[in-house]
Length: 291
Image 1 (cartoon, helix red, strand yellow):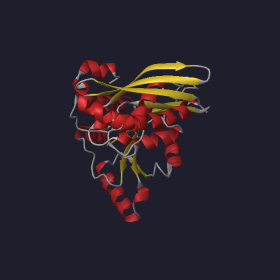
Image 2: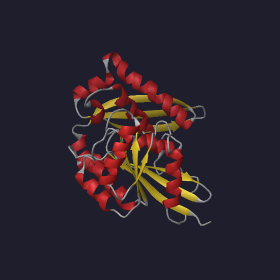
Image 3: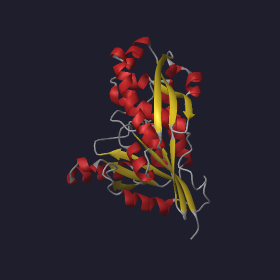
Image 4: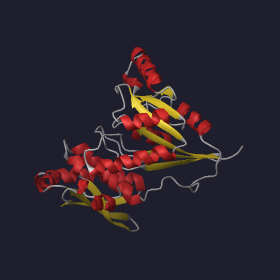
């Protein structure tokens, strides 16, 4: 049998379960997950290797109509994923009535790339509603193969895998066979911290924050990490820190647990908060933060 390799890119609206699906398919928690929309900001690759194939999954930010330059740059990740995909996993869910970004929907309707349209969260639905959704999307996206799934419950994950391996082209591997992702360790540490910010703070605060790992020192028994949480306003800095530092302490405790599990070593984590005014609207700052 010839070797197969392909880029399988996950696209869809915010909060439909793209990151949960990515993590299930890869078998590792590479993408952070919260109940808030727009948690994912970057394009994150997860690489699955077998003797006969290599599948390069790509999680992308939720498709949206930009309100900040940050959003515009996030949409560039989505557009790039549309262009280089061998297979597109277009994720929706039982609640979504239409993709909220017309240009992306039009591109999906016109593309010749194979599309698996995945209706997620069917464990929260009934048969009648599910059939209605399938009929609706079949009319909107006649070029797509539609599969009802539950990423959280792993329902139909095996079927998705079967179709992916059938659809990707014959090709040598794009990455070393022992690769899991193209991102450095510091990126995932910053994402784990940012995930806890999304969990512990409300309203605009999580969206105004950016995390940068300044220092990573590995000793024989412990890893020492220093990370900066950037916000846009002085008032936001106070909210992040909380009364007598209680809020940021909770973020640090929860993030440290995840980081220790990820790197399998004891961690000493220091968090600091700084103001980087209007960073979401500054091209140079966005570039510096990897956007």
